[in-house]
Image 1: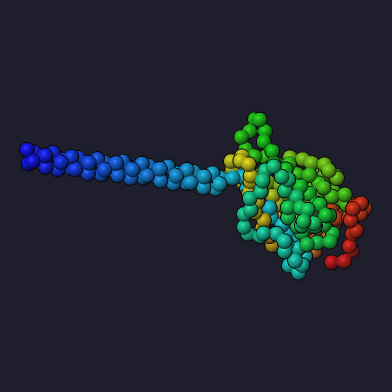
Image 2: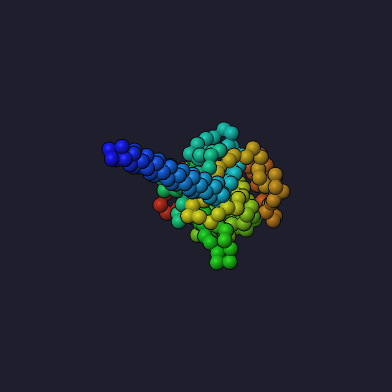
Length: 231
């Protein structure tokens, strides 16, 4: 009788041991599955971030090599910008998203707005002239104060002596987009052979042989600021 009891006790302990091992194996399998799912979700999120819409903004100014015009811009690195907020460029770095170190630039020079269309899944953009001093041109079409227009996939923007080449890189229309700033060594109008009607290309001197040279005309001062004539 005692031998039978010991035999049953041994079998019970063996079964309990196997049961514990089974539970351990099941726990490890569950943990591995959860880890795999977590890694998959993480990789998916990273992939989605890699496919955000990106605006490549390339600057040129005839005096950019001797003046620190772009000292406040994060050149050469992509920055994420909320699609809810306009991307503003101007002299006032505290008010605008990005600033130019130039007293001739308006406190608020321009703004780029992101939007979506019911007929397109992509993120699109408009650009608005926010300067009261003069006009801003988009592929040769002039915009007055507070006027805006759709931003094409490749656009040449001009104001004062600045040229900006903006290229939209398609991506997912998420709650944010990316922006990357660069500096060009030659005017983009010359490189892309895109010139305004009746206006000759801007040479390295930055002078435009046109009349009335509307884009270089500073015009009236804005009501909320004092224009400095010094460089």
